[in-house]
Amino acid sequence: MTTEDLKAVKAGASKRLLLREQGDRTTDGLCHGLGPGTEHLQVLICGGTGCKASSSATICEKIKEKLKEKGIDSQVDVVTTGCFGFCEKGPVVKIIPDNTFYTQVKPEDAEEIVTGHIIGGRRVERLLYEDPKTGEHVSDYKHIGFYRKQMRVALRNCGFIDPENIEEYIARDGYMALADCILNKTPEDVIDEVTRSGLRGRGGGGFPTGVKWGFARKSVSDIKYVVCNADEGDPGAFMDRSIMEGDPHSIVEAMAICGYSTGSSRGLVYIRAEYPLAIHRLKTAIAQAREYGLLGEDILGSGFSFDIEIRYGAGAFVCGEETALIHSMEGKRGEPTMKPPFPAESGYLGKPTNVNNVETFANIPVILTRGAGWFSSIGTAKSKGTKVFALAGKINNVGLIEVPMGTTLREVIYEIGGGIKGGKKFKAVQTGGPSGGCLTEKHLDIPIDFDTLLAEGSMMGSGGMIVMDEDDCMVSVARFYLDFTVEESCGKCTPCRIGNKRLLETLNKITEGRGTEADLKTLSVLGKVIKDTALCGLGQTSPNPVLSTLNNFYDEYLEHVRDHKCRARQCKALLTYSIDSSLCIGCHLCAKNCPADAIIGDVRKPHVINPNKCIRCGMCMARCRFKAISVY
Image (cartoon, rainbow, N blue to C red; front, side, top):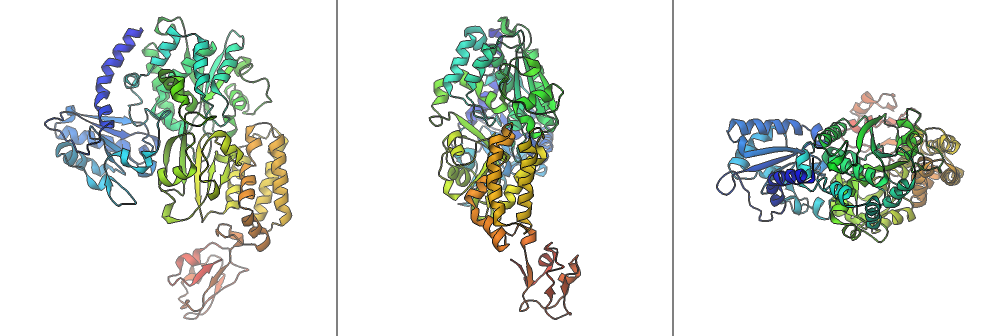
């Protein structure tokens, strides 16, 4: 393929996407069924893992069947896209050109969408998003609070193109950055542009991407490697997976650009085997790029050659650390090593290796297409661009979001996230996954960027953001994350292998009612020692959940060890169940369902719970019809 061929493909595919782009700009609020003035429609259906698990593939087939039955299948394109982001309301279906946004669609809704909207020109009102504040239906996604403050850069193609169609990617300026780089720019020019953009690694470390590429460029070797870290292991995180599922060609193109810049001809994607859909779409993208001459030998006649292989991981969290990842790809135990030497000097098979994560690579093509100045104009002084977050937990709008750096936590949680579920009170938000910390109400107005989060005892991480409400026990939250880290530790260094185990044992003591105030001192001192002495980033950041909750919720820890109480009622060993004799009618239902025979009393007379036999399962409280049983 030549550049002229590439431009011809872009021109042809752009016609197919023109209707989609026009629809994306629609603001008239009208519903356009097939008829005069609208002879062609497009139906975009979310094909991300979350929506597929909720039958989006079946919805797609049902709509195609109905269109064929009505004889209008040639006038309507049904396109499976990547993730729209609004996972809480999936499966999502969008109708173009009027940009109607249907939520929580079921397979049985297919007929009404076809007959009512596509043929009849009438929106299916019950499938529209309902604004929780006004109760009104919103037809256009641009007027939904979840999307209003977002800016999609890394996610620019997710939910818009068919990820398995290379021509749709090319129509969105895909591979144009690669063509421009290898035909018109020197490797140093490309690295300078990436450096000036201010892009920092989105995998958690936040190291300047252009500087990293420069190190790899300067290393002298007969072979160099470009590695994409797709080993996303944070609990509740799905940013990288969604990008690979929705826009895999952006990763392929970015890796090729990195290869040209650093002097590498070989690319490796390290992806966990638990991501079958991402793997399938990545394989498809690589095969299509080879077919179009955009991977392989002599790309676009430039003399530059580059190809990509996929390597599978078994889901070890520690393999998100670049040296552990490299060892895993070499067939060794996934354990980190001391740095230096850094991978840019000695990485995969001892050769210079550049490692970036999926989101970092996803930003590269658009930076080079639109310019470093454009990208650096977004965000804050030291954190440029946008950041993708997986917003989860006790939040109304669970989903995948992308916001400019500097957006506040309050904006994310209350405007994009729609506030706390069930009208509960916000308590904390964990950013950065198991390596991050818990931030409180006093932190809601801080800007989200690398340095501010670190200063407040948390971190950006790869982009997990889990929201907690008043019913969450912060001691138990710290224990949950530490338990995960202990399980995922490679065990190579003593601080992580033994120190974290001791931290976890101490937290278990506290949540089981056996803790003392001296244990709180132990948590603080030991946590700081582990941070200072562990070998890799996993160990060095593992105490963050403990230290941040100690700092921000010390009163809860004191309640656990001094009063033996858990205000959130999450620590079973600290709970006491009792029966209100004024409300109990002696129906005996609680006693019949108690697995420990801890409830005694005659029929039609108030019952009593024996605290020594009670196992605190809550079965009695669940079965009582008169709300006579309470827990404190």
